[in-house]
Length: 246
Image (tube, rainbow, N blue to C red):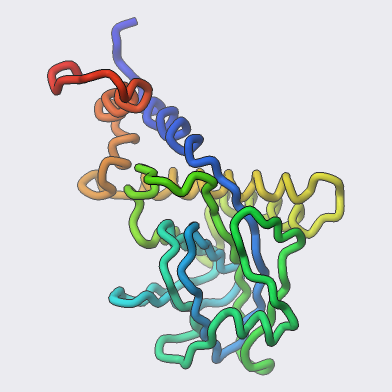
C-alpha cells in the first residue's frame, strides 16, 4: 500500500457521517394543487422536503430570492426553516394547517409519531392548472449539535431536466410511493428506509454539484486529500492532531 486514496474515499467518509444522523424520515402528503394557490409552512426541528412530480411552483423564504421549481425538482430545507410554496409569487398565502382542515384532516407532523398512509391533499381553484407534489420530512433522532446539518445551506435545490428528475430520484420516488400506499406487512418501514436513502442521495448529489470553493467543510468529503484528514478527525476525535500530522 502506498498510502494513496481513490476518489471514492470521500464517499465512504460521507456514509459514516450520514450514518451518525440516525434518520427517521417519512412521506407526509401527496398534493394536487390548482392555480392560484399558496400555503405557508411553519418551521420544524427537522428537514422538510418537496418533490415536484408535475407542473411548476415557487418556493419563497423571508429575506431570500424565490426559487422556481419545475417537474423533476427536489428541494430540501435542512434547517427546517419557515417557507411558502405557491403557484406564483405574491399570492395570498394560507396556513398549511388550514389547508389540512379544508381537506378534512387535522394531522400535523410530530417527530416520533408514525404517519402511516400519506395524506392526499387537494387545494386551490378546481379549474386551475395543476401541480402535483410529494412532501415529507427528514427527521433526526439526535437533535443536538450535528456538524453535517450545520454544514448544509438553508435550501438544497436539485433541479430536474426536461420535466424529469435524475434517475436516482425517480427510482427512489417510485419505490417510496409504492410502499407508502401499500397495505403489505412492513411497508411503512420500507417507505421510511427509502426516504432515508433519498436524503443520503440528495446530500451526495448536492456535494458533487457544488463548486470546490463553496460547500464549507462538507465539500472536503469529496476531495481525496482533504477527506483523508477529515476521516482521521471523525474516527478519532479524542486524539490531539497537529497540522503537520494531518
